[in-house]
Amino acid sequence: MSNRTNGWQSFWKQNIINPSHRNHATQSQSSKLKDQIMNQRPVAIITGAAGGIGGETAVRFAEQGYDCVLLALPGDDLQPVTTRIEQTGAQFLTCLGDLSDLKYAQSTVEQCISNFGRIDALVNNAAWREITTMRKIELASWEKTLRVCLTAPAFLSRWCAEHMEKQKQGVIINVSSIQSQMAAGISPGYVAAKGGLDSLTYELATLYGPSGIRVLCVNPGAIDTAMGKYDTTQKQESGTDPVRHSSEDMIPLRRWAQPEEIARVIVMLASDDASYLTGTSITVDGGWKQQCSPYSIKHQQLPSEFPAD
Image 1: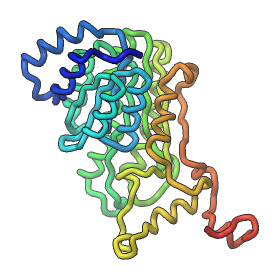
Image 2: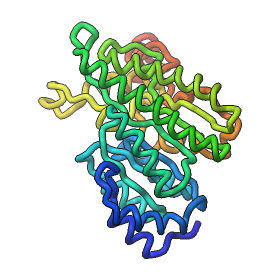
Image 3: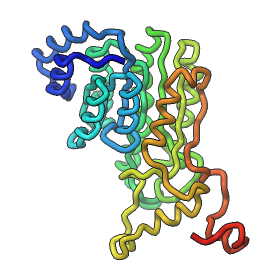
Image 4: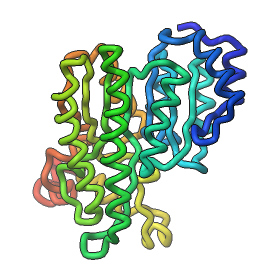
């Protein structure tokens, strides 16, 4: 895969675009440069791209020859991700906004087409949640969770699929969670939204399959990201994380995943190596969902088979 020219790299370094604040000069320059690469490289849109699973996914797409459109919240630090993308020679566009605003979400698709002329992969990765219970959750929190975790992915999929259908190919990958299938009791909006995202995956795969569009769902378990970490009073006092230790006690691989381990699965699913996969969920949880008791209990039952940590 050849790198872009220095002129291209200079342009993109200087034009990290917030689609709601573009000026006409930038649009004109972008239009001229767009003609040089139109239809030459595949393009991926990744939501929640500032770090964690989204950031690692964007970098891995770039390493595989994709140009990337990175969606993130205003104020998110994208520099670590964009620096790594630049090192691959790929081009990128950043679009800053809140996915609970569907006008912003739709504008990112328009910006992608305006600058790259195509969309080959959409990764609905962004998420938001509040740790609370159904007894206490406020309506505003419930609605925001569903808008970010379910409504935005649904309509981004629709808007991207309009262009993918013209290309007669494309891949949509929804990043869900094993919490779509396992109750936790502490995040009702998130659990409901992720369950809906699983079902949306199957619905869209049925609708868009005849157009050559594959739709898949990845269901991670415990991931070493900011969202995956719980800060507790005990952790602050002792320097340890009892919640993490307790969750690892449920995982056969005995650890949380790193974001890049999920990213590798996502990018593989977007590739031709997964050309006959659609309408299904891929669980990436270190075996958590399929086993029923903590290892501390197994140790009590069969200490010779399950040594203490």
